[in-house]
Image (cartoon, rainbow, N blue to C red):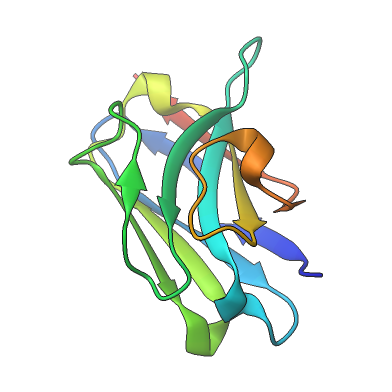
Length: 123
């Protein structure tokens, strides 16, 4: 089992940047592929990005390609999401998640979730 805690959210102007972190408990972080999802008010939780156990095979939603970068540091039990050129429509609660699969691109493929961190982009 793994526990996940997100941080780094906040209020930023459109065009700005934020870096989210997801800290995992336990000594098994490197055995999980990881992902970021987000949920805006009144909308379904949607996939943002995913990365495999070793930090390879990054996958992105089309809406964030070229602007967001997912990475992880297994020595620090931490995953990151660097978000650049933020847009108003990026406003959402961002969740990190862990899966025992090789990689996960869908919500139902993930086994563990963090509590979320709010990102608000002002236009």
